[in-house]
Every structure is written in C-alpha cells, then in structure tokens.
Image (cartoon, helix red, strand yellow):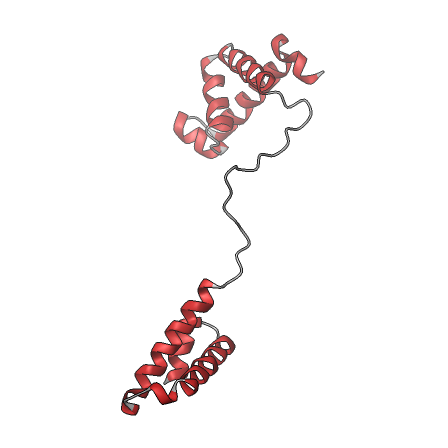
Amino acid sequence: MLLRTARSLTGNPSDAEDLLQTALAKTYVAWERIEDHRALDGYVRRALLNTRTSQWRKRKVDEFACDELPEPDPAPGDDPAERQALRDAMWRAIMRLPARQRAMVVLRYYEDLSEVQTAEVLGVSVGTVKSAVSRALGKLREDPELVFVRS
C-alpha cells in the first residue's frame, strides 16, 4: 500500500522504492517520538509526502532567472533599418502587382495558406493559383526597386 502511494507521487517505480526507503528510514529515526503506533501508516504517508516535496524543491534547475535577457549577437549586415527598407520596398512592389496576383501572393506567402486553401478562398482552381503566383514572382524578381537585394 505504501509503495503504491510512493509510485503515485513519483511516477517511476525505482524512484518510488527509493522514496519509500527514505521515508521508512525517517520513520525509524523518529520511532521514539511517535506516540500512537496505531497511526503509524498515516505517519509514514506524511513522511512520504514531505520527503517527495523536499526532493522536488531540491531538484536541479537548469534555467536561472536573471535581471537582463541575453540578446543574440546581431549577424553582420543585419541592420534593422535595412530590413525595414527591404520590407517597404517589397510591399511597394507587391502593391504594383495586379489585384488578383497581389491577393494570391499575400495569401500564399504572408498568410501562409496552401495552394488549395488559396484557391478555395478566391474561388479559382489550384492551377490558376500556381500560374498566377508564378507570374507574380517573376514580376517581383524583375522589379527595379528590388534589384539591390539580389546584388
């Protein structure tokens, strides 16, 4: 019965055996202080719970709280202003696409929908989505404002 209680506290049979052994050793040490030996079962259960709680509190913690969050070193050439300029240029180029191609590019690459989902949303066939997105990407590759990105 006590082993079952220990197993429910640890979830691991070998840890449960260790926990029970520790609790019984603590009970043996405290034997003289136990007044009512008929309540011994409850005493051992309480020792099991207290021992498990102590083990849990003493567990090894791999992460520690700190005052400042560690920031990754910025990659060379990873200028936030350049990234924002690229985003702006990309949006201007996308806005120059025809409305249907623009909608398909936004759904596919910004909303992360599949070709099938994009086709369902726009009420067209999957082949239409594939060909329109292909033509739109071709136009974006040739956009003069985005040429500096490829060089």
